[in-house]
Length: 515
Image (cartoon, rainbow, N blue to C red):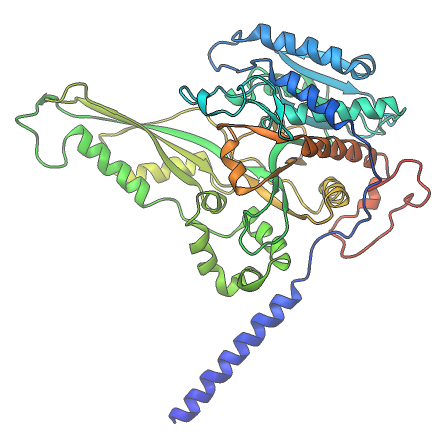
């Protein structure tokens, strides 16, 4: 009897191992096999000099003062006019909301939907007291050691300069886009985009404009960040998380600290208990939606157990999820996050405060809503004495499709320029200006071909922000090739990822090289 049971168990184990192995092998690569893009000579030193000049304008934006650094923004506009003469001669330029810029490059096909490339002019301030930690002046735009240094080098003047440089080069070669191309450069992205992106979106909407697709800043080409993946990963953001901050207020009877109330009934005690529950009992993590598609796309490119586990989430899903929850970056991809950010109570060491106040910030996963998260807060606080106030924010963005011609256009362009890179969809955990354009397009993608290793990530909004001059030239090539690829028949992109080398209509003998 025991022998028979052991044989049955062994058979089941072997069957399970076989199923896992077959399923792992069955999940083949989803990467497009495309020819390399034609070589494009970019004046690396010249474009680095342009970015360095752009960084020297202190375009820190303010949520409360629309005129803060307004003179710097206007000087920056004059700088762009000087350094990109062909763009300003050929494209229509509009100033929107006083400081934001909208350029329009008319296409030859008036019936085709326009596309939009986005970047932003404004930057975040330097953390007080950290100036001495910078290896170059924070707004010096210094070029040294193969990098352009300064605030905005990554976020987001590199994209802005690269887009303009790509258009300048195309104009010099006599290129005309088939589809109208908009360039939108907000001046207040870092503080919400209400004066810039929102007004640009309203202007285009008033003109009846519908956009084929949008590319904004977002995810990067990361190298060494994903365990088990030995190649760089170009993650194209197909959605971004929502934003909700909730203010919690609880009153209590003030008094002398020598006569405290019963345990747990002071304002600080009640607030501490509520915050502890919110932190301990967070919204559940799950491998669904964008996160699942991302991991299933990169799984065939991985090695070892990571490939096996991600190819068999039906079996290893709980183990994978447990590991993802342990990392700050990966945890943010699989759940609506909870962050305790502000706490205020009391003003004297021997006085019991009459009120305690705290702010909790949530970044909402697609599928969750501000209403559902507010209900979660109410359930965890579970105290009628609390007042809960939802601050202005945003719902999670719609999820843009990966089985679309526009996603495949970006995918193919990346693969042609970065052939050793794994392309996969991803989730943008921060906010961008692009979410204000959800009413104008169903295809919004958040991606910049900026190369980043683990040690580079703290530079984002941090100290020693920089970009390699060679990488900056790659940004120019990306936007240049992307715009060239627009002129080829859209039907050639197909509706689903291809597996193998396919010649597109018009590829052979084309006068504009397709990549």
